[in-house]
Image (cartoon, rainbow, N blue to C red; front, top):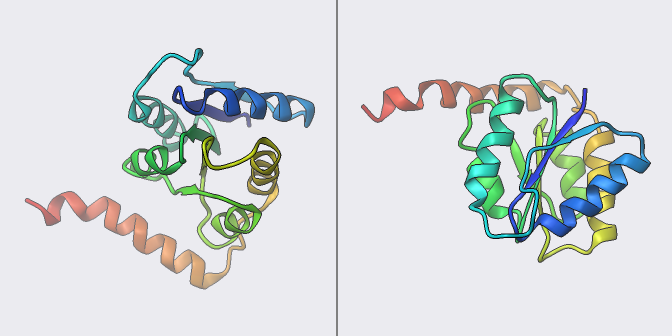
Length: 153
């Protein structure tokens, strides 16, 4: 299954580098925008990408903005999304093995291109551990998502 990828204007250049990297690795992807470095609001891209992951069109995705934080915060508002802002290979590995993260958020103003590529490689290639303790914790997150609206009515 291809990977979705998206960025705002701050992440545009790094997104383009990651697309080249993915192509060289033989990894299929679909770019969901932005398609030029003109200003765009990161939530618009994050929601678009996250909704496609949540509805099963993509198994994983990569989002890029200035720090990775804004994209991560927006994507995590979509039910079923576990987006992780990762800043090194270790955070990417644990995001996958412990949290079964389905979206990676990267910061173009924080990371160098080579480090970002390494993070992507680790994120894509690392499976979820499937350990009971991690499954239990993820289920608690999912249960909260399903019931949160009822809590605030």
